[in-house]
Length: 236
Image (cartoon, rainbow, N blue to C red; front, side, top):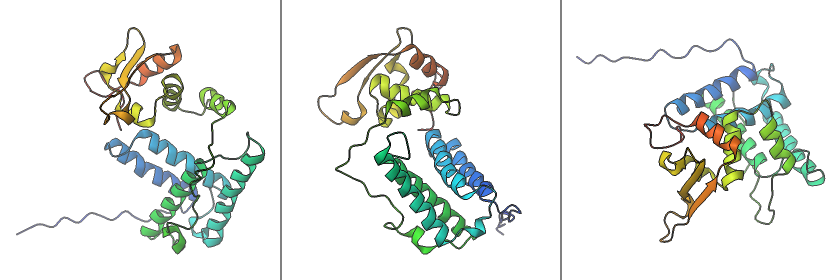
């Protein structure tokens, strides 16, 4: 006879606050990161982007208060942040940041709905509602002030600062960073010598050779994976 083991369902939480469920949502992503399904940068982004809704709505307010008016209100607030950036380069948000914020916000609401904690507005399942469209005519750049805030910010994780430094120091894309191998780093001379990820399918793959800044090298040594591994960074 087969023995069927049923998993005990998760008891409904007594805490119905937005803060509790955001923490719960982020923790689910951390478990996926531990399993190697997503990167730690993705977890940090989910936490940061949902933090915008938490600050706007209120951490202690109940998730049962979330309805179509709340969703529309947050969407309009994000649009206001984009409008502010047009008149003040230090205010609001620039593309594509608002697009990511709304995408993660909608994912959070769908998760609550699918777990029967709220009845989410049907529009959060739409690919066209509450979204920021890509703009091919606007070429946004990150200001020097924004870069300084990241590199000097006490609340910004060192690992995040390292990735920004690699982009600045070596012109690396996210794919370059995730594909970086241990043998492509000269740990003594402080150099990165590797083929660009975006052109690896080409017959003529450019090989770049960058001298690392002291700060970049120090953080790279601190956050590299064990030497026995092939890649410099785990949780790709």
